[in-house]
Image (cartoon, helix red, strand yellow):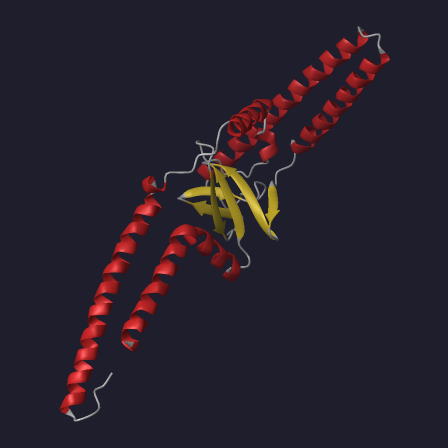
Length: 251
């Protein structure tokens, strides 16, 4: 019986560990990497479906290679890159500057509209509201102007450096550059829709990890049956040996 209970205990521990690995396997691996490799950086890559992939990488010569794609940590230090990669970095910087300049032009247009509106308002209270809005837009414009020559876009996540990239773009991004008013409206609509609808639980039976879990659970159950059979056979074998040597077999 001790053998049977031991087998059951080992299989139960194995089952618990399998469940934990299925539920949080990637997070556990990421935590182990962060614990063992202290000089690494968190790398977040935004793909075309607006999902964020998370990696933990150690930069080598100011660059990462993720899925055979180059990502640099500092666009100012690209002397050790090949000509093709240098062109990718230069094109990315140009595109980023164009985006920022476009945002600045939009802000200038809004400021001009607000100034023209103030000229036709006689109520002082409404004028003060527009003056405050003009000042707010000017501050946003200054923040974008400061980004024109800012090359290093790194943040910090749990005391380690973190970088954000667009998939396929080698230069780290300041995510505030791409957070437009349209994005804000989309997020607001999504939140309103989520609040107005009852929460829906995900269908676990369609999840790939749950299918793997069912396979492991079946294998564990099969091993449990085998363990019980082996346990009882072991008891029978021990009783036969005990009888053969003339010992006390009352167990």
